[in-house]
Image: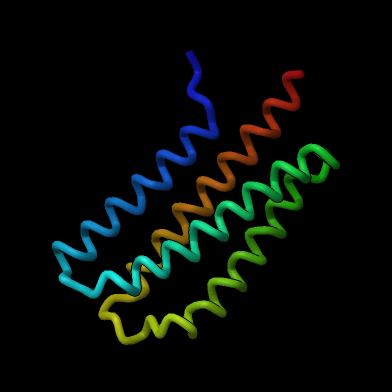
Amino acid sequence: MKPNPNILVVVLFFLTFLIHFSLWKFVYHLDEIIIIKFYLFLSVMFTMMITLIILINRVAPQFLGLSVVGLILIKFGLMYLIRKKLNLEVIPGYKFHFIIPYFVLTTLLTYYAVTLINHDKKQ
């Protein structure tokens, strides 16, 4: 039985959050408010991107690959803007804490788009 990509992406997203939050809180002993605000922003952005991918797949599936590249570019721009709002520079090793989750969620977004593209090719 092949796992459902929707469930797999959601489980991996929450697993990423739990691992990062536990490292943040119990290993580095940093303030949890910043990481919760960061992941709240990431989850809203991730949900928005998945919804846009589904809508683009229904409307124009031939442009799904190109639209994923554009959505990743938009996501990068939004992350650059939110970095200033969250004042991440005060956290020691902030690049490690905020770039790794960004790339993990970008990988999950790409995986979801690839499964949609492959599913359309099979039909």
